[in-house]
Image (cartoon, rainbow, N blue to C red; front, side, top):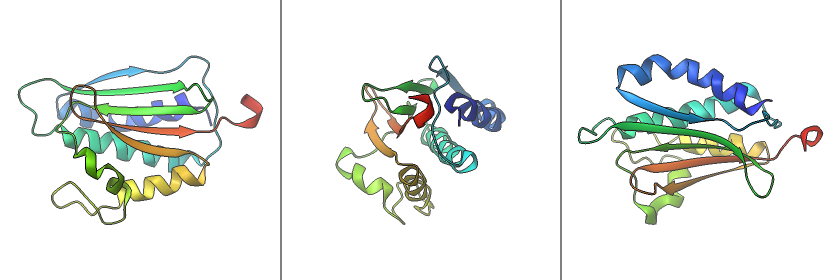
Length: 152
């Protein structure tokens, strides 16, 4: 799969939601369209979940712009990464490991399945997913997937 292509597909899906919720998008995709192995629909579902979570995390923000940052890049180890960052309310860093547990949710009314399922999909592709506190505020979720052997 071309990472940038599946990112663009998801951006088309969330376009109206982003506009309706007054969210500003800052998107920077890497050069060269790196390729990974995986199921397109499943990986799109992971990215869609991360973007929807980021938008939800900014719902109550009224004192600053609702900014969602989306990046694709190849890291120093050669993994292809997709990073979703928001300027929302963030999460308790001490409980970050629990974010990927089944039935654990920081949202009122959340089922706690989205991130757990996303982790399973990413790991089935040989990758990893992690959560970090944003530099200034909010949260960052990053997917790292191995490059497809023919693209390395």
